[in-house]
Length: 332
Image (cartoon, rainbow, N blue to C red):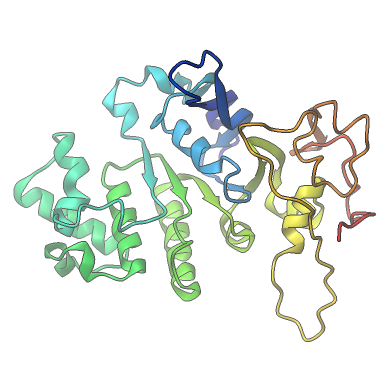
């Protein structure tokens, strides 16, 4: 894996306006992504985790230019995605959606679904297209005889393999995987994850893997970014994050991972309250309303800096938990 970043995300914000009435002059916004800085290295898998509604899917979609950025910039190989009018550059970035069935036209055959990117870009058609689609299906573990069938004839795992084949059609460098295993059975999840790892090694691909499952992200990711209410609160190598988490929110997420054990000695961190609304986020640290170690006069007033605690390990917290230690206070 190269250390050279493929993608730079600098101060990115995505705010969605809220309509308050025809005669109202005031404006409010849902701050889905609110000041994110990240880089993605060539050949790595960067996992992005967090609760539902934290903004991770929105971040993924602005990363690909599928929705416009409110503020900040995203550069792919040094080119701002807002200036990507060159199709040769665009073809290098692909996506696999969470719901494979929902991302496919039910009236199109597998041949048409997988081959559509090639047809749209004028790269292939006819017998040559059929040959390429057959090879792509082979590469994801499907039979080339499947290309005449329609999406409703396949299981969830097979549909996701078709979606991966479609993403590979244009020979990309980067693939965004938006919860690609969340709708699958555990055994099928493992098959799809192993397939993705094989394809990444074979084709030297870069992945951003968005998920709410820490077990999945632990299995497939080189680095992990933890997201909360539109912001990245912790970023580290996967092993470092799981063994020495520094942010209280990361501790809470890790404590919720189920373990198979005869003796259940694991102490669960139960956070109080609900996730605040991204339309009206708390002042200071956004996690302070649920944090078991928040201090009045600091966490509720001052926004913490996203700083490097150790090499490659960043955290946004006024009082990060020391490596190897547990939270001193737990919410009941």
